[in-house]
Length: 454
Image 1 (cartoon, rainbow, N blue to C red):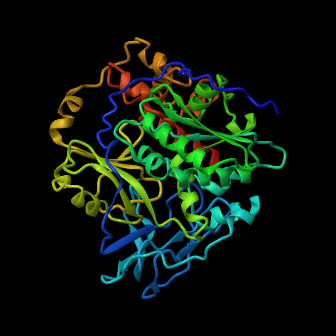
Image 2: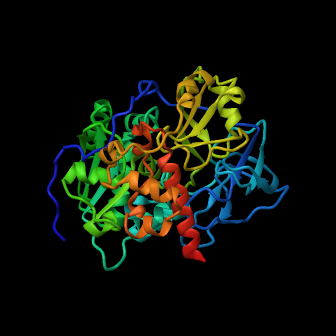
Image 3: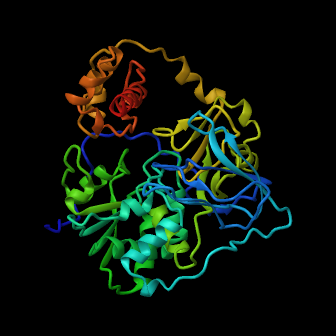
């Protein structure tokens, strides 16, 4: 397979430029205190939830597996705190339905050090050894998709990978957790990149960073120099134009190489594998220690937060605990709390839900912040074409929206490529009629998935 030349360094077509609001970009990562209780949902990732391997009343230490993989597309979960299993029961989830969860009461006097796991000799580890270590760590994509990382790094026998594309764009407004990780954990990131290259067989890795983060590229380039010449191949850090949704893997590949991933195809078909910087930095930290994923960096910000910042949060920490410590004391009265970014994130109805592996940000908006948006009425489509001009995939959101209104879901999928939509929200953002296009597309996709299963 031909090794594509780079660096193109031009923006992909269409897209939007929302205000960045990255007020936390210059603030170092801080550790959030451990809560008195953590809630570990079994369903935290794409794929089958793992099976519980602890019982109520059992003492656990931080890092100990509490649920083990029950399928190839499944990952284990580890105790985020040292304590005792208080319950295994249904608890509220961010998506709405209650889900089976493990509730652990933390020991008040515990140091909460990672007490589980044995160090590995990663220098001697083969690609298969590293892949198994990634699986054992319970790692999923920390950019928000939460797809099991071991599955993402597994290359089919008939495929050949030459390039590891590392996504450091973080194009969502407000979010800065990846930015801070690239600055503060650049050595871990380079180490994780080397592991991923060894697993996939890639001969080079290219980290794409939006050009509003020059300090992140500088830190990463320094870390690459410190790592020296490596057997895995070359590692590069490059700036790409700042535009939303540059963080989409297909958009990033277009910016780096000037090539388009075909409709319905994956980057793997072009000899590339894409991973998020946060995911690979976590691998660089966890794998040598033989530890599992028990915490992650989360951006907590928004107009309703008094102490915004990037916090290192134990997985399973209740959202209310996080917001109280970040100074969002009136979060219960806030108009909207969003997990993730404002473009693709999800508004939640309860602060009892926990921080999970896929939560990259928590945004709090006050009632006065939402007044103007909520005052806008929804009007019929005026066929202005703004949504068509903004769609990075070149779809026709206007037509898709009208088909959705008529419940012509099959036609949306077969003739208008609904499956290519990755729900970036550009169409909804620019629509002067305030039509919730991306929400309609989500409903249509869910109905088509249910029909396919039936």
